Length: 348
Image 1 (spheres, one colour):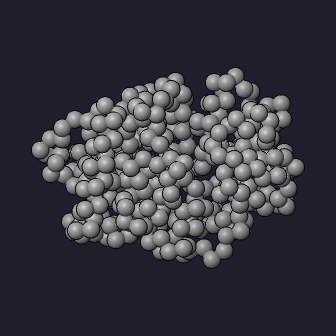
Image 2 (cartoon, rainbow, N blue to C red):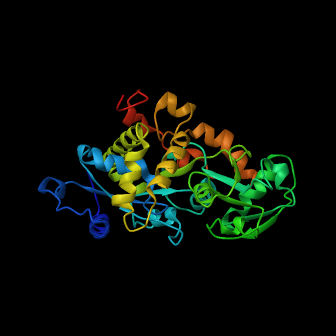
Image 3 (tube, rainbow, N blue to C red):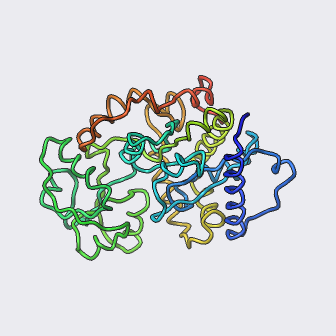
């Protein structure tokens, strides 16, 4: 294994950061001598450390990363964290996750030298939520409606119309991630994570309708896993080890959604004030999104360069994106080929 002195310093910093996080979470234990000797692999997450990363928390709890000979470190994301692709491309973490496929392709097109190696969600968890008294169940229902969304998602909303052969005809209302704009009647629909933001409405006793971006024609990956190209070239064995442990974690998570939810509440998100019941429901909601025909045949986290080229790129073009990068230049399916070795599971 070859690692530059720059990356040694970066990983040492990441490890120090995580020790601080674990201390805050109340779960810091003195690392064993064996653990201290293992290489550290830091990952920049795209959201706060809740149950969205259930497979990782299970893998930590079960010791899968240690079994693979690495120490996994987690750099939390959130609404105030800058573009995770740029963070990885700038050398501040070797591995990262990104929510939006479109923003990931933007970064690659703009020169981010990263390699896409997997995806947690085989379909986007994004959806349009609306009140049941004024439901949005189709693109036709969106016509003339006020749709609230973070600014960066406007082109995806435009693409939904284009994909369905319609001219964009709606009022875009820039909002953050709070569902209250919908509850208060400021908008007719909001773009949101169907896995968790709908649960907030449920807890408030609000009757709502949800239609997924996939059902509206935006069928793309989410929570894509990517690696700094230089790091991958120098440390392929560590990335394969990280992927193998992570796959095991997601496989085991499907057996009992409550385990990772408890870990999120008690350990990884102990300072976030998470609701256990909500975290369990979110995990139950997200597990089906981690599977597809491709994962049934080849295993979790799988990506397909062919699907990106033939199914997802037309969606991006509908969103107004041009000069899309050659898929072969940034997609590498071989790492997960190595992880699975021809099987579709690791634990079963």
